[in-house]
Length: 82
Image (cartoon, rainbow, N blue to C red; front, side):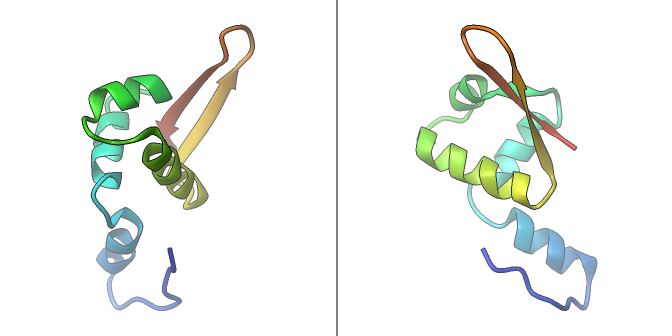
């Protein structure tokens, strides 16, 4: 996704970052509590794992989400809003 260099309003930046079908849903779910990938998949109907991972990666690159990995088996990863 391309982010513009200049904006006339802060809402333009917000729109560019959260644009799409899945990002608002992901942010809404993570606004309540940190969730694992499987919990997000379970709560978001009709999203593929590939699409979910892609959207999470974009939100992490914008600095909106963080990813926390826990040691042990099975591997556990949680996503939360920064």
